[in-house]
Length: 109
Image (cartoon, rainbow, N blue to C red; front, side, top):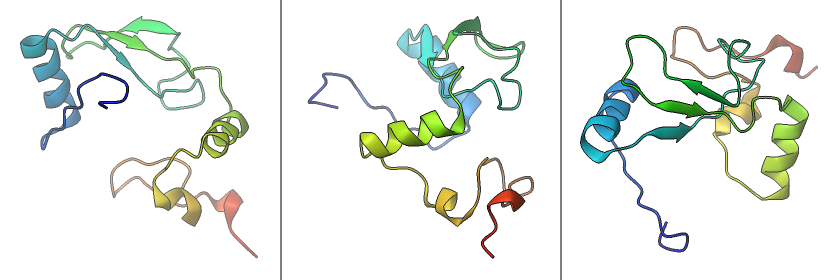
């Protein structure tokens, strides 16, 4: 963070509560989000779209909205960006423990 002159803030609360604090107490107006058009609720998203009803008011910035899986993985590998280890175990979408399942198309024979 120091190398790029920005502040990293971490929270031990829910995602929505953290966003609320950043908007209401720290003046945040926009967030970079990793949503792609193939993700849940991604089809309705654009490069810039306002937050959803029931959320604090902010602008969602979706720079990878039109990327497919191949583009995402080429980017991660090219720039040696760390990613969550469950992807290597066949998970392609991560949610909570009740709705996260391995992608059956990635099962090894």
